[in-house]
Amino acid sequence: MNFKQGLWQQQTLKLTMTQELSQAIALLQYTTQELTVFLEDKALENPLIQIEPGNVQPMDPLRDRSRGKSKKAVKDRNDWIEQIAESSFSLEEHVFSQLPLNDLSSADIKILRYLIRNCEVSGYFTGDTNEAAVALKTTISEVEGILALLQKLEPAGIGARDLKECLLLQLQRHHPDNQLAQTIVTDHFLSFVDKKWKALARELGVSLKEFQEVFDIIQKLNPKPCENFIYEKTSFVIPDAIIEKTTDGIAVRTYDDPLPRITFNENYYKQFSLNEDPTVSRFIQEKFQDFQWIMKSIEQRKETLTKVVMKIAEKQPLFFQKGPEYLRPMTMKEVAGELGIHESTVSRVVREKYVQTPSGTFELRTFFTSTIQTTAEENTSSATVKNAIASLIGNEKKQKPLSDQDIVDLLENGEGIVVSRRTVAKYRDQLGIPSSPKRKRYE
Image (cartoon, rainbow, N blue to C red; front, side, top):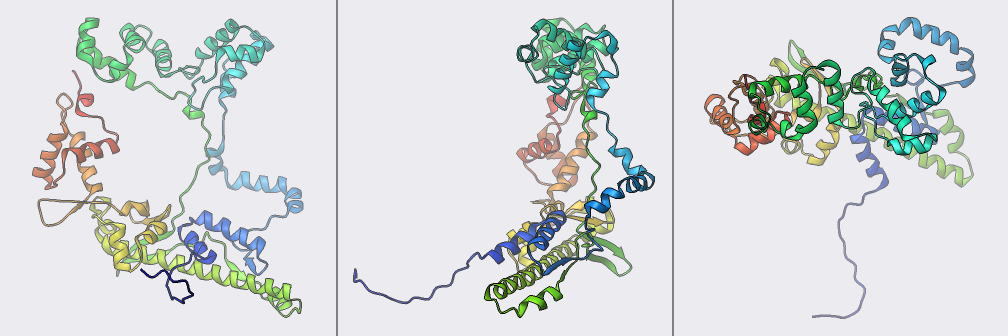
């Protein structure tokens, strides 16, 4: 081996992740909202970037403050429908509206407020009565008494400390005479949920039919009694692309109207580009290059998104012509290969982006499904298999539900779809459908 020391020149090729390339990749996967925020931030740090006032209204605090009342009046008149969804009624207000406050002492009200504020959004009390007594400088029995008062209010189940207590409070309120249901929830809840009914029936000396009746009652109870008090403003999905049926076939276009329009500040550039100060000149050139790179990255993002959506439309014509049940198997690798780009690029393009179609608005990732073998020469998608499984289970006899192996046989013989029992179990779990023993009904 040669261990001589010396200097040699060698040419190599390697890809360097520059700041501009990193920015282009980031812009590719940005949602419309994320890209809007990015451009607005860039406009603040780069004086050559202007946001057109037609798309993003500048905020003038003095003007807005003076016109606040009139603007609110206009909103109240014009947006009354949207405000219906925005109105909120807090859980605390709902609780106190049910109580004669004159009959409660200030100490009781203080304890009640503490308990309500230690209830999670579902209505469960997640605090500790001992800690509450110490924090409020009162006795545990006083806290327990106010908690019992809270649990008597609507909605039934509020203030429960766990699921069992929540269901028991609702049973005591709505089914006070059903002792079997209360006994099952109190003493045999886990075995009941696992549908170990035969052993429980022998132990309690009741029929399986009575267990089925209790099951039906518990199914109608609300495990999250206060979920209606969760205030969330109505949100809307804005599509990134639109696919339409026309007389000539299927048309594809991107929808970038929500994005702010950016323009070049020509006056600022002319004013400072000829400045003799090298620091100013260098600053202007850097910001000019930054503007050019941003415009190029946005254009590349739009072109790549258009190509991917057009390829989806090309490979899924029946989906857009007849409906979602005609979705065919398609992978990101397949689309990337036909477009001559990397699979990761497709993944970034479709991230949290939506397309409006004749059948509704879908996330772009919806169109990428795995391939399932069929007895015919053609393949089908995993989404189609899931729909077939859901349909078979929906039409089964509940007294004798289909096992996963039964579904495998029916899919192959009836639909020509070849899947394993393990695949059926996986898809059934993804659909939120329990196993056959837990679907069985005793009439």
